[in-house]
Image (spheres, rainbow, N blue to C red):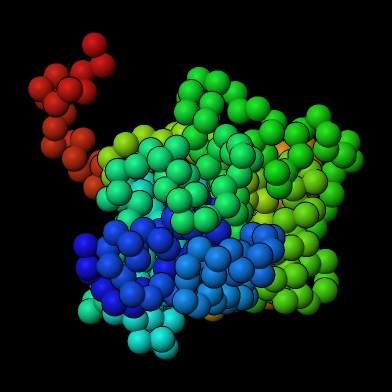
Length: 410
């Protein structure tokens, strides 16, 4: 099946993406395959992955370091938006996909490819994220998804690769499907598919079990500038160092574990295990700082924006007009979100214990019940009268009709 002459393949070094190389060439008639492995902080040896792609038949095997970009261009806007999918998942994997897609498009233009490819199956969310992002960035590029179409079982996929000299592990190193980057780790499949079974401890890698966390809490002060985390405990840090240090500290105290049944875009429910130590703490801390610096109406309106933002990212619409419009709103709200938030990390919990800002709207003299109280209590009566006037008028109009209106109390 000839679909393209030169293809750039998103390459992880795993079974599916490795088999994609000979499959594209021998089954679909692709003349040249260029692989792209992206370093997102997953901690793997990319030089070995690069060499493996060449052995599998790639014409070129490229590596890109995109850790900083992932944090600054994708994670930071999501933190400013307090983006969580279904109020729980901080989108660690979902945020990486539009970045990988962007790099695929850029490399395709650099090497003169007429198509890009990925190893996603037809059941997950990632296929949607890749396909939509690529279409948004360069709609002229063909997108190939061999693993979505070849119809092979895992055993057949391994056998196909061995026919072309691709070394395969004697046994699968993990029964789970794992995705890892500096923002977090996800695990699915295997016994996790039993929604009623507690995940075994072997599933986790970034966070300690509660029984092995320190008995004494740790305190960390996070500094924000216009909604972006810039330092820990008074020390300015690069985005990468900040995430590395906070991942380590929060993970030590068991913070950031998420076990959830989520609604995938393709219409099925999936049991997912996430570990997002730093991202979990940062979103909680950022929300606390907003509570101090944003007005009530902005905070309440932003709740809806945050939910929509999380859904867009999860559903693969990072490069969409709506996400850009939401970003404009979020950025406008972040001008005063500057200050420090002190978090206590202990036994799996991250709790805010202090916050301060030069733009704080909290006025102790208005909030206090002590001798320094400056709130005008007499003004409350008039306020309550005006505030409740619509309710009072409605009640007077409908008095005696309670039964008809469902207000009888019987």
